[in-house]
Length: 119
Length: 120
Length: 243
Image 1: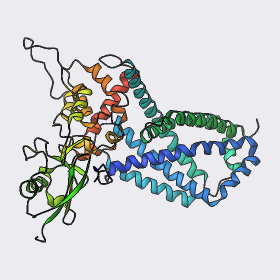
Image 2 (image 1 turned 30 degrees about the vertical axis):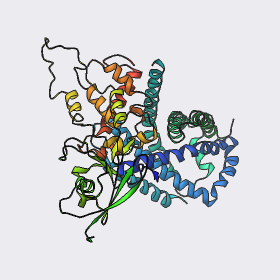
Image 3 (image 1 turned 90 degrees about the horizontal axis):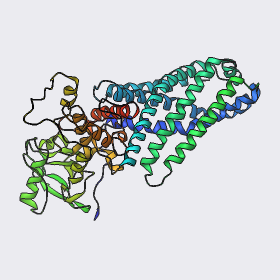
Image 4 (image 1 turned 180 degrees about the horizontal axis):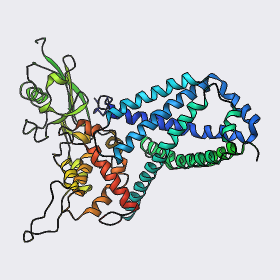
């Protein structure tokens, strides 16, 4: 005897749901990151030297990985957000799946560009 | 019935505010991403950051608009996520408010910081 | 037991129960409804399920097949079978009466709750209402009025699952078509009904409803229309007044 079945991953294995999930996940992580980001930037009140000293913390590899991940999250959230604005405010033309594919490519491209340009 | 209507109007306004701030953020984030890619070439030092932002009114204005848009956008999003994930806990609104406060205060401090470059 | 038999797991019980496996001979051109009917007629007469037209017009036979809500009469086994296995369960998000039959009352109550019904102010003595077929409102209404209330979208929606009050895609879709009915006189009440936590703004545009709808209706589009309408009415007012 068990409880009746509920909605599982089989019902959610479609592109539009994936877009929703990425948007939610990236938004959540960005929201958590934002206060820390502002805190670090406000160290600029110490002047260039003081600021440089606090920035030295970010030389740790875990921060470098975090920066890379955040750029990707930002790109994904931006692209997904623009899609939502089009879905809600633009003329209806389906769930804009082409846009989802482009957003994924955009996220990957930003990730690669960051790796290429960063020191 | 009156309460349900007020709540409905509130939800509609929150939705609207989040979408308007999203449109502002669309521009801000696109610009910010472009700036990031431009700035990180060959490494990034505090000197370089402040060299660009210190005394620059345009940058200060841009970033303050950015902070204000985040202040509207992020807490509404967090409120939705928490309300749906933990519906009876009551933590959604307080957490969203705390986040909003942190973004507004720390964000504006950061804008003042990079504009003044420590000369305050 | 022939080795071309289907292994079909069917939900037996109500909110508590279990999946029972039946062996059903495989045929060409077999629908999932054929499979369920075979089980009930030949193997286990105690199985409860719903169907009516069996030709894809009434929506009564909607069930969860391999995790996805579908019309069983329009789902060929060959399309969705995994190896030789099938899993058939009642529609999600609705209380189970018995086996594959769900209690649709909350689904239709929410339809009412969204003011998803028409009310006009003309009588038989007045002239016919004139609705231009190429008007924007009529086009928008056309996109959503073929809904037959089968419940597939409702059963596919994660927001329905997580917010018990959420009116759901079908009710909101119907409300939207009626906001585009120029003859209807309940527009303020309708907008009030679909605002709020239980209304259109709870939708996250996941799109499961639009993916699942057997009539290719897009509740996501209708709900987007409602979101804009209600937000404007709350902030600036609409042609029928301010919320």
